Length: 333
Image 1 (tube, rainbow, N blue to C red):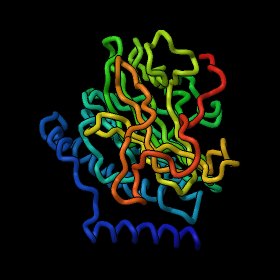
Image 2 (cartoon, rainbow, N blue to C red; image 1 turned 90 degrees about the vertical axis):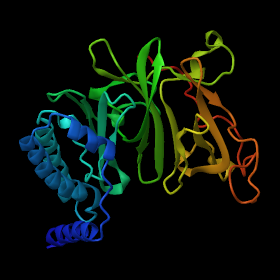
Image 3 (spheres, rainbow, N blue to C red; image 1 turned 180 degrees about the horizontal axis):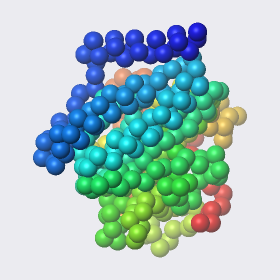
Image 4 (spheres, rainbow, N blue to C red; image 1 turned 90 degrees about the horizontal axis):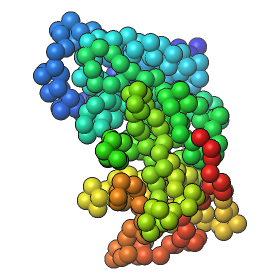
């Protein structure tokens, strides 16, 4: 009975959303790509039909709070249906705009896209799913296998699609290192029921055109890179914080800097307990300099006229140090 009620609530929610005209706006640039691509009418009809089914399943995966079984079944049905849809020629150009619960990010060169989503387990645990679809007429994808549970805390290992650090990506940038393209990804992870993480990840493609995650491009010294110690360089960057805090971690196009909240515990005795960390009103950052992300200790050196609004020149509490703390040793990879 509970399962039937759960499905009823979900379908009514989907119907109400559509009736109120709250459907996510279409990606006009991608729609233009569809018109200019060679998707046949038959394949376009197939993709639209698949999208309708995928929308219902993704809604259940995300919003059925009454039944884990329903969420798991919907997720396990979603995956093969999505793969079957992507088999259509030129499916890369189809935006799947109605899949609001699935994140879709495209790099500036539009050479691929990454689709990611999450499945909520009891007690605040999450499992992440995703794939990289390359821009090609025939389907070429790399399924992403979430193996966060097997990786060290705030891991600095170089990873692949087979041992991916699972998260939902919400932004992507493109840079060049040694004349090779690299991509900076911004992701969100619900670590557990007490804490959340945001992550800056580096993606590149190796000589076999396979995805590789992580690269030593986050630097924490202002001098030349040759003077850097191993602990001053990270392959990916994390901020971890209290589950109900809302710190920022994203690229500011006006400043041309990655800006993120400096985090600290309100009680000094909680130092190192990241589930107690919250924004203190100051901001750190990374700027792309000499083919690397160079750490900026303080992004803003001024205060807004209102006393209770960030950014402020000094922290409200805690000590303004690098956040989170760097690992005590370099992992081997």
